[in-house]
Amino acid sequence: MIQYWNVISIDNREATGYLGRLGDFFWRSNRVINEMMAPVIPSTYTSNTTFFEERLQKINLKTDTAGTTIDVALPLELLLAIADELEEYLDLLCFSLTCTTMWENTARLRYRSLYSKLRRHSWARTRIILLGDCARTLPEGVLSEEDKKELALEGNSDMLGNAFCAAAENFTQLEWKTISAHNDKRAQANIRLLEELSRFHSDERINRWIWFDRKDFRLGRPEGDRWMVRNLSKREYVIKSRSRNLTQVLFCLIGRSDDPSVSMSGGEWLINGTWAGDRIDVTLVSIHEQEHGDDPKWKDITADVKLKVMTLADEDGHDVEFE
Image 1 (tube, rainbow, N blue to C red):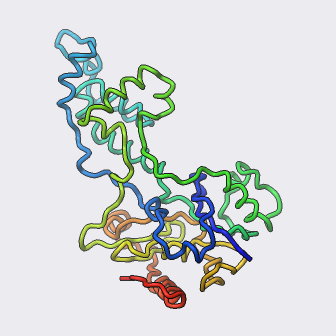
Image 2 (image 1 turned 90 degrees about the vertical axis):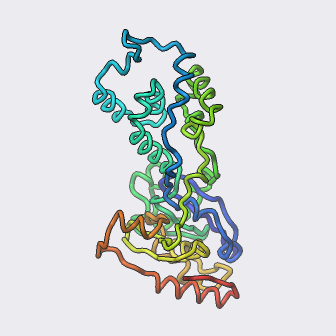
Image 3 (image 1 turned 60 degrees about the vertical axis):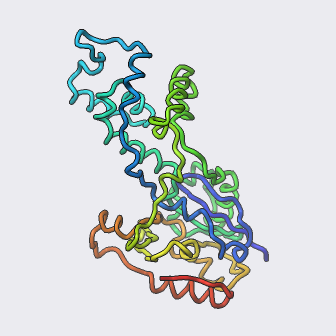
């Protein structure tokens, strides 16, 4: 039987769409692995206040007798407290743009808010599954009751996998999109705000805070560091020095189906991936150590996964690097 496969982020309600037979795409480099990398904000995204000198002269902001903006007449502590309550990045950005003082003092808050915004557009730490269209069942607990209700999957659990496959066909297709405050729904509904953001977008000193190419925030491995594919649900991980074949590591762990016809070797265990539906990300060992130290609850399964990947590569005649 011919079986087609779809990589799905359950939390994001996004999917790659059917990639074909497993053997057709398993050994290819797949950008899914880039979606799994937790975003980082490079140090080059720093404050630049020189554009305010010209801006303040043009937009005719009201000032008090001391020549400062009305906002700054409030104590800075109160202004930062207000800024800290602004949950949406666009709101915080607009608040920060009121004057130089606010821009300089909200740098940390903007950084945190931008990271949160980027995370919402990432598959890192979401529930991930490589699902075959012959899947009748799903691992227990992969879908919550809320998931089942939202996706109208209530009913016979023996056919839950089949129903979820059908529902996932309507998920948003994975695309490498530019993230923009300019395209925020609130901006689109507010013509004046949209025009203001458009003017900022044309200024190279500020447009990095308006229009973000996600490639700028992709994690890079410094010399001496190593990659880590992590399962945050089971607290397990696989370590590799280089990014090559990280895709195969992931696919070895997240597959699920009830039909072992996978058009390649290893069908029996590829359809029962032990990480299928778990929360997964790709990060660096150094970052993991910062977050978790030497927590003994985490388990290194690198040796087992390496053996599986190398065995598959040998049987299918593929060149694999696993160091």
